Image (cartoon, rainbow, N blue to C red):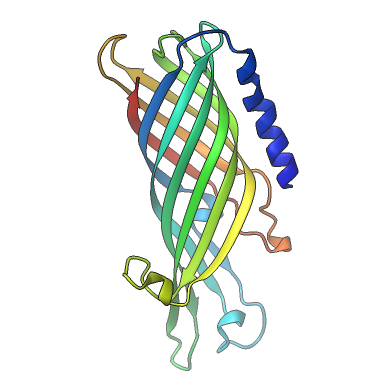
Length: 226
């Protein structure tokens, strides 16, 4: 699985050696992530007949708004086509709730935190100019996603976060991105970018194999391009 992810990225990123001598466009942006699908909300039915056992009870799990950022380098290859390298990360908090964990039917709540760090390559198709990074653009690409899932009864924002019995799962998998963006401003001076992309895990999301749910989210980014 990891070998396939590496080969896919190398196939896309390796084309950089054939790029013509055009000025690369560097960008930085702040991002908001809006989880979708099972990553946003999922319900898991009880596994057995022991309602007082937290592992045998129905569960409701989901993640909320994520915060992150990205660093990009866009290499024009044609007047309206560019290849972009993308380095980004995002942190998202959530919770897992179980009903019936004691005789009074109280809820047991576990705090969740998800971190994702990605390195990827994308194709950008511009409506005006890839050389000047102007106008509306469409993008699609692949990424290597390195994820961390934390579960704890404690508060992740507290100073003693790592002393609160944190259970951690790490996952590396291939992700896909599809989106649209636009650059505002002129050739000279500060230029701003606004883009909305949809990210989905393409591998390593088989629940029957014990994988975490696909990390699906809409990312809205606002930043600057130079």
